[in-house]
Length: 126
Length: 312
Image 1 (tube, rainbow over the protein chains, first blue to last red):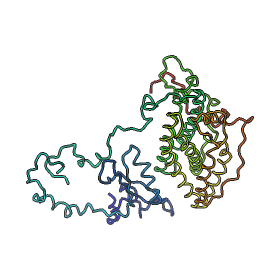
Image 2 (tube, helix red, strand yellow):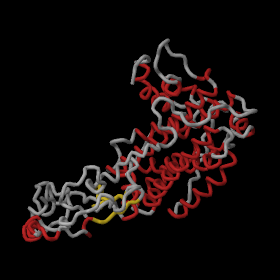
Image 3 (cartoon, helix red, strand yellow):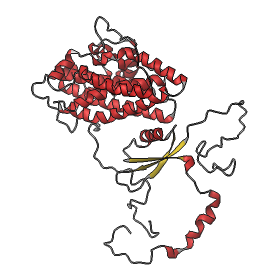
Image 4 (spheres, rainbow over the protein chains, first blue to last red):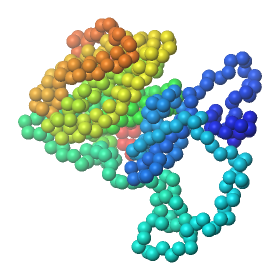
């Protein structure tokens, strides 16, 4: 996970979380490797969909280029009619370390689910 | 949103992707595997000479076929992954156009199709693509130039798509239903090719000194073959006269207008490179091609020619 190197870097920047690239001594001389273009996350909404769905990420130099790249890479099979791209460093993500305090308490609050009502058969999509 | 009692698996909200991968089965024209012209009326219009229509379709088809193959040579060689896929998409769009146009040519004049051994499963459009000799190709010489650097690819796609889009916009009203359908589909593809390459053109022109230098060099390299795109061949004149084709000379103003906008946005003065002459007055539309095309075809056709009876 990408939080191995500094503990505070929680974005997907720099190798999609596989290998931390910043501040790692490579022993290859003084110049750092060529930086990649900024990372963008791509969301696509299908023809029949109501919401945009995250389909992946890509690198691009700016917002408009990210949109064109997303069209080329993520809509090849007629997946959608609308694309959103967001710079990955604009996204704030929850940390896996905080999983327990963030999410476990909602697992035992059965009274928050609408399961105690009888829904008539002819009412759709409840 | 989801309740935690058993939800039926067909629930559209169950999987994040189920709303995206919808098989509407309303596929666009030209996607049938067996018959590329399925769904469109292929009768030759009244007063139109079959061989003329076929020769015209062959010209448009060869342009797309040769250009598609050249662009496909960029696959796995582009500067980064997303542009690699973009160039491959462009090549595939053009290949689709080529398939439809060659199929139309074969339907309008079967004598064009090279003869293959008895029992060969090769369809006529494939026979035209893979079993003709270089001198039988009718593409403009612009399309067959060997690839250079990325700037050259950008300029090549820009010039080609601006020209072809101007032609296809008029071809939508062709009296031939097939050409009109191909043009209607093609303008959407070509509009994207033009926009993609125009964006890169402006980016490279106004980027670094090196990108600008390479871009201007690429423009000088390709400009000599730009005027040939607007020469009217006898076949094109006949096709335009009978209402099925477009006279290239007529689209020059529109195409150069679009190009002028891109050049202005890029702050590029254009090229002064002189036009490349034909050989004995003959150019690509007459079947006069250079060595690059022969080399390209040798590679492109090698597998098909090795297995003329092959099933794919």
